[in-house]
Image (cartoon, rainbow, N blue to C red; front, top):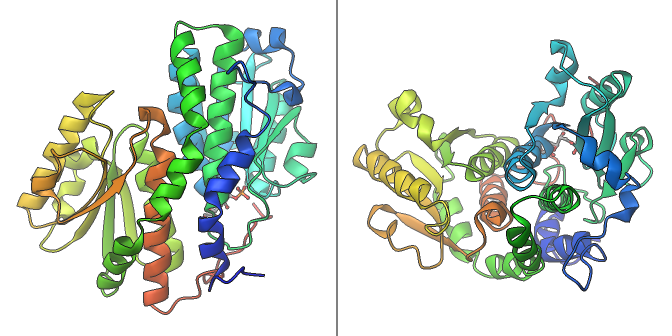
Length: 369
Ligand code: F6R
């Protein structure tokens, strides 16, 4: 049942190219436009929305953080992302013109369910992004966009996360398409590149041996830090979460720009710091800033593990280890950058003798608040 893999997690990591392709299947028309009729939300309604609010927990929350960048960029509508467990306790501002997006792999997470019930009570429409057919969250939502990751057995979410990110892009691009934005041409281009992304995820998977060796070499460390900017920031948070839950190590993700506001004090000799580097094309200002962050932490003794695009040579002088990922449009980078972090956490967990598929104290779906 594990298909020749030692753990479900390894199998599910390997299934990601297919999971991503399946989530796109039938949703991109031959004319390069998205067809999401399955949402059954009339275009008129989608044009009237003036705000998007995303609620989710854990890994799904990280997918939501990425979605915010995509939604605000492609639709020019404000988008908030909130931990589902915090949402209803702060009296959020919601009305009929707010689209609430609830992201959940299991569809049974109680915090997320309570958040969506609260939103519906306030008159908002709820769209679920979910991986489990007929589960509670889609049943209680106005509309659902299913991720087609297939069953995810390992407690740590991997393929579900990638497909959640894909589904979020589909929602963002679709809203952009229906509402019409100045990014029309860009949207068409991104839809095309999105259909290439599953091949690129496959390419990343083929180059993971050095990442495994690196993980094993760090098995006696206590702490690993993760830095990223823009969509690389949620990727850093996701890398840290995977390491906490699987390797039981102290791991923290930071927005790299915050480093100088405190966390840089943590840097000491030989501390492993993973840095997710944005593409030098596109938002090149961010790229240059993060390169100076890498330089700063290395000067203070950090062992820098750099995830950077093919051909990005600027990082080379400051990287103790480089993990290469394929070139993608800026907003799509999380789909390739997260994969090495999953492999890294899985290998460290194994090296530390932990139970990969069933980490201590965790359950696959959290049905209590
Ligand atoms: C992390 C993980 C959890 C879940 C979270 C939400 O690997 O699995 O953080 O992402 O409990 O679960 P769902 O998506 O089922 O609502």
